[in-house]
Image 1 (cartoon, rainbow, N blue to C red):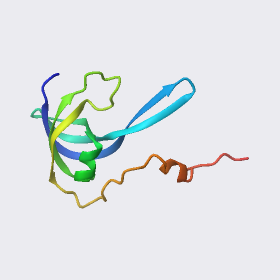
Image 2: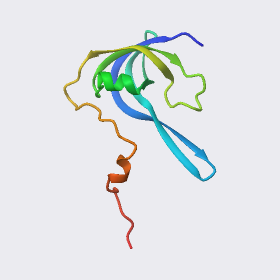
Image 3: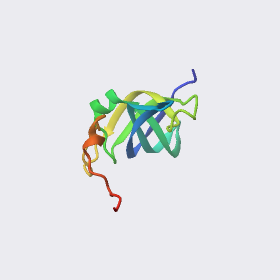
Length: 123
């Protein structure tokens, strides 16, 4: 396993981290956590980057866009399986809370069944 990289930055966006599995005619998905899109410093170098965090970390810290955070993460071993470039995050800390936007609300597995579609086919 490679060494962890320290990072710090402003959260630009938060996205659910989902794994989709397909087997013949069956599909299933599972929620793995969240991906933070950050603008800050990774290993002391200013840049934008993506970091994967677990469900428990998000539930505990309730990140929002505009929050300042820091942590340490491993580089992803196989870029074909992850959108983020870094995962297995530890020492995750909320440095400063943004007041501009509400906290992220987790989506349950059944929420998609209760939502109205954005558009409907014309008959």
